[in-house]
Amino acid sequence: MSKRDLYEVLGLDQNASVDEIKKAYRKLARQYHPDVNKADDAEEKFKEVKDAYDTLSDPQKKAHYDQFGHADPNQGFGGAGAQGDFGGFGDIFDMFFGGGGRRDPNAPRQGADLQFTMSLQFKEAVFGKDTDIEIPREEDCQTCGGDGAKPGTSPETCTKCGGSGQLNIEQNTPFGRVVNRRVCDRCQGTGQTVEEKCTNCGGNGKIRKNKKINIRVPAGVDHGQQIRVAGQGEPGTNGGPPGDLYVVFNVRPHEFFDRDGDDIYCEMPLTFSQAALGDEIEVPTLKGKVKLKIPAGTQTGTNFRLRSKGVPNVHGRGQGDQHVKVRLVTPKNLNEKQKDLIREFSELSGEDQIDEQNTNFFDKVKRAFRGD
Image 1 (cartoon, rainbow, N blue to C red):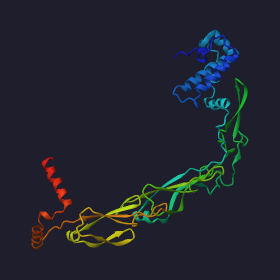
Image 2 (image 1 turned 30 degrees about the horizontal axis):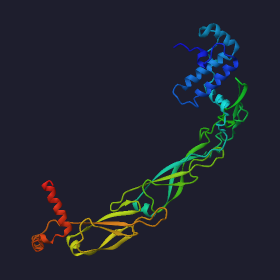
Image 3 (image 1 turned 60 degrees about the horizontal axis):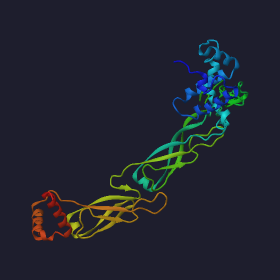
């Protein structure tokens, strides 16, 4: 692929002055810098602009280019001097925009947050509990004390940066000689190197261990909710604070109760005689059995509410209710005497005994069969 004319790249003609070349380069470098422009071709265009400026801003290279163009094999265009260190884009960006985004590698940093999923039985979530959990997390190596050096030795001052953790890099720019700071690639910004590494942690200074933590599960917690345990995450670095631990609850379903928010729901069976004549039945609740009065003539599917028999609100705002739905149980395997009694009851009742609600129901069924 043939290279574009360098003057065309900068939007200039061959008679452009040094100041015009600088001005065009600064404008285009801002426009196409990868830290500013996220387009797919921004990086390629930035390199093209930089290559053009490297040549046209140098009087000798410019003279060669004006005479031979891209065909001159000795002009040095496209080599290491023109491409530069692509990692230096950050330095150019700092030069233009102030360099405020570079992080001090030795600054205190907070540790990472951790997440733990805790399984709870239904009633454990309702009433809460105290429990201990074990979580794996990083801690200072006890063998080396966290410095990563083999016992009997110590970390040494980095010979490349002199212990500062940073290197001063001088660069020639359109504005003169600029000194840029970079993290030392030998010590990774720590200012120290470990020649003889601790065999327990491999020189990392940290090891993963299981730590036991006491957790207070609040009463009324629901499936999918979480609590934050401050300061129980990964330890910080360079004296920074530790992260936090987030405990997410996985509540197992109950075989009898269903939960919706702070309310719970259940179903209770009723015999025909209980529903017809009325009765007082015992209903299980979260805290034991209670009496529930069933009025005579209760229909299957009727709902009753037991106030404040539900789940305590996790934020302390009252308590939910328990909803009881009754289901009429049809008897099976009747003996002949029972059948005769039911037939007699049916004859005595007659169709005129069906109440208005049931009449409406049966009328709907008849209309459905007729296709109305």
